[in-house]
Length: 122
Image (cartoon, rainbow, N blue to C red):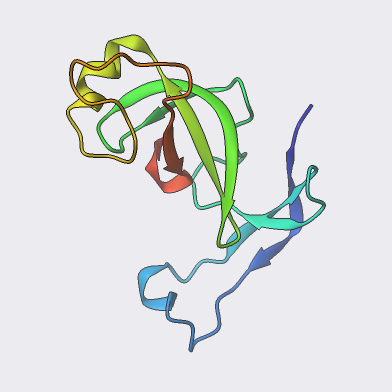
């Protein structure tokens, strides 16, 4: 079942928004969130928001691949919680990134990397 469906609307920041200098002039696509019934923004170049179970490639905090386990919403944007494949655990463990296990600590299925759409590689 698809959670996020592209709506007919785009989001455009007003000229006095503090975020305007950091974003492009292009409108941000809005998606309908089936779970919340609201419109949400997606910052990625992918045309669709990856669903739970989809495989993704990310460049943050290092390049890795993994499976989407959950979504999160913050400031109106959709983010992804990803379980990286085991071959990337060592490289990710060496990063000071969130609450990921440190080098030498065991990696569990609750150790997820949180990413935004702009972090993904097409």
